[in-house]
Each structure stands twice: as structure tokens, then as C-alpha cells.
Amino acid sequence: MKTLKDWIIATGLKNRAVINSIPVFREVARQVYRWMPSSEAISAPRKDAVTGQANEDYASLSAAQIKKLMNERYSKEEAYVVTCLWDKVRTEELNTVVINMFSPTVDKRILEVGAGIGGSAAYISKCKEFVGTDVSEVAVSQARQTFGNKPNFSFLTMDAMDLKLDEDYFDVVIAKEVIEHLPEPQRAIREAFSVLRHGGLLVVTSPNRDSLHLRVNRMLGYPDFKCSFDHVKEFTFGEVVEMLTEEGFRIKDTAGVFLQPYWGIHKIDDHVRHLTDNDPRMVEMLRDLGKRAGAEYAFCFVVSAIKP
Image (cartoon, rainbow, N blue to C red; front, side):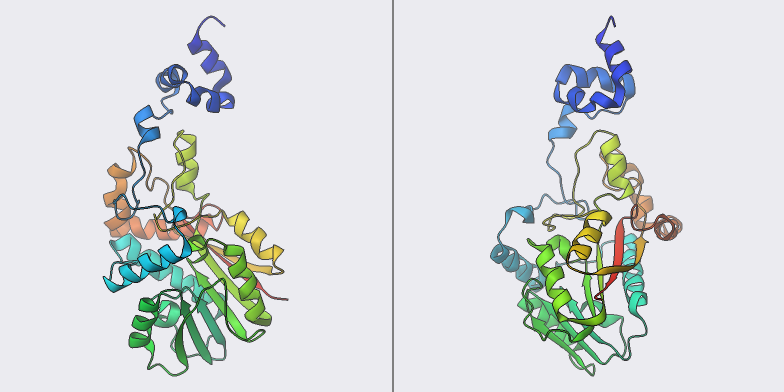
């Protein structure tokens, strides 16, 4: 082979890691394939993809620091605020899928860990018992104010990784967008197994680290990014299935929620965000595509698992 360009064309994707590590190779590759990111894009700090703010990465914080920040955010009403149509519809879709996993609810004892200011209490009208827990005292206080008068509904300040509750008691445990916030998510799954009765159901949801948008992002040569700064670690669908089965659960059902092909991708997201965030036609298409794509490719996945 006579030139550097010839070598890059011949070796292609097999040597992408090598190409990306050497500036002159990377620049030639960008001209040949148009897929390598600029050095500026590689080194630029990531902002939170939802708010656009450069927030501190929660993965670097202790549990006590995270709890303090969450109390502050709930006090200021800045925690998990719906910012656009897509976020609103995604929240509704996620809750609908979760509740459908274990409906009807009327005869069930339900525990929701990481329930925040109420969680699924807004979507469940009647049940035998509903207990919502959260590590934030401020969130629990707000949940009690909003839902405390509903019959059989209660809220407790409690760590999902250390549940002070009766074993073999609940029919359903919900962990909705929780495990990505925890320093030891497998401990939380183990705790959920303990408090569930035999035949009880755990429903776990999480942003998907192998969502289509992140797969596209990697193919373009960009580094992975989390969908929110306050996530300690995000998981693939396969990783969560593995954690569940390791703790003794048997997978019952799975679902995908929303498909976002270009969400957060450098130099692409800015051009399509107005459509994917707030155009009703596009939001509805993305909602429908999430169902069709399933848990492996969707933006969020939902997994239900039985305690045998």
C-alpha cells in the first residue's frame, strides 16, 4: 500500500481504535469516511442531555452527597421536571407500560422504591396496600402531602439498597428509573427479592445504554454519554437481565419505551431536537417505534421478573 489513505481504506473499521488514537490518522480518516469526530468533539465536556447544563457527575459523589443534592433539588422543585412534550409523553408511556405489567392492582400489596414525590401512586387508583420509599426526606414529605390521604397509601424515607421491611410480603416491587442512580444496584435487586412473596413480581425500568442513539453515536466514533448527569451508571438490557437472574428472578416480560435514533449526538441532535422534543407527530412516531423496537434498542427498557 502506497499511502496512509490506502491503509485506512483497506483496514477500515477493524483499526478504528488505532486510527482514533493518532491525530494524523484520525484527520485522514475523517476525510475518507466522514465518520471520525474532530479532536474538539472528543475532548469537549458533556452537558446534561436534558437540561443542557454542565452539571456535576453524580458518579463521582458519595451517597451522602447525592442525598443532600436530591433534597436541595426537591426543595427547589427542580428534580425531574417535565421540560417538553417528548418528556411528558415518555413519562406517561413508561408509567402505562409499568402498570400494565401487573394489572389489575386492586388486590395487590405494592412497594415502589425510589418513588420520589409519589411515583406510581398517581397512576394506581386502588390497591390492597401501596408503600412508596425514597432516600430523600423532602421527596417523601411532598409525596405524603399529595397522596397521603389515599386509602392504604403510605410513604417512607428508606434506602432501596437497605429495605427495613418484612420479608416475603409484597406482591409487586417497582423500581422505575432507580437502578441507574444507585452505587450498588444489585443490592437493591437482592433487597427486592427478599421483600417479595414467592410468585411476586419485580418491575425494573432504566435508560438503555445500548439504545439506538448510543449505537449510532459509537459508530460515528463519539464517546458514550449518559442521558442524565445524576445517573451513577446506565445499563444495557442484557446487563439488567443478568443481574436479575443472578439474584434468583425469572424473567417474565420485557418492553421498549420510545426510540430516539439521534438523541444527544454531537452535531446532529441540534438539528432534530425541535422535532423529537415538541412536534406531536414525531413524538407519536417515536412512541410507537419504541414499542416495535423492544427492550434491546429502545431509549428505555422495562423488565418484569418473578420470584419463583
